[in-house]
Length: 318
Length: 171
Image (tube, rainbow over all chains, first blue to last red):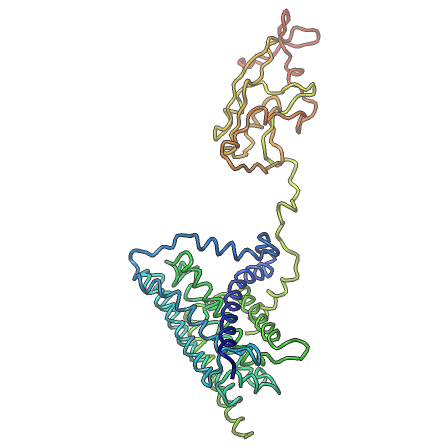
């Protein structure tokens, strides 16, 4: 058993690291996106433009924090907090290394699914309380998209659970010592990642905000740091999906011994974060009905098939 | 499906391309020689002001940013008393350069004129006047037009033709 002090230290550490990753992602996304568009991106403020984040933050803090008179004031203020809370709550599960994790729940994966469903409330409440037609449209899309992609996300994880025989993320990582789950569960990985993109409503599945159709979708009316919190929430979600992909399919902290386990974990996460940004740089946004059709007509049968085959194999080998 | 993967890969390859950005204050692109930038007042080969304060530039200016006042010295040579260009209004169209009969007013390839105060964008004659001849070398207006001096009007010296009457249509 670990001492309470160690747990508190880990909690503070995880909180600080996650929030600084979310901040650094603002810079990383702009830089990488620029490189893929043959530009330089922000490279003036500080070394490599790293202090651009600080400049952005100062700007956001000093902007007028406006609540529209027609908005539902309480929900309007609460909505941006929900997305950050839901994302940060899920990080308690992530095992960063054999020793560094906040808590090892035996229902870990279920807790993750529950928390990511709570994240939908942020979009829906933010959209509804804005009392704005574009926001509402964005919120409706967000609700439909995130709830339906939740289904495939949950189903895609079941294969991993069957192979590992547990819901605990730590034990799932330990079960991958022989072979990473991405090899037996490749379909599961693909579907989980696609669902993850839809879940964090990143491009190309950013239908809820779709700036060319809906102004800015569910956060049209938000300004200042409340808008910034939606942004931070989005980046936290991105980090979370990357961390979980690594944990569930790419062996978490496992790796050759010349680097410490934490470094392996964060290296793998960084690759997926970069891939998130690459997707944003390369793919156009699908139409809304295409998005839903793709989910229900392609991903659902695919993942059900994957589930049945995995179950059969597990029964066969037992 | 394959086309999606292909476009992701192609986007990734752009990482290794040369950047299209020109990092401006450090790297500059060469401007064409006829670039219309900051306006200067040039001098003739003898080092005297070319401007004869004819007001044609001021009239030609579509935004009315040129203000000047003519004056005349004891030899009948005209020059501007003051010559003021408000560069916060100037649109760098070059009409003034076209209108100038003496090649005095020229637009040069320089556009880095940012100032913190708007008043600082108003350039006086001292700011506009340069020491050289600018783009048009060897032209001296008074050598071409002649100059009336005491006891001799235009076109009366040896080898000179009388000046053309600009108000007459006859050949």
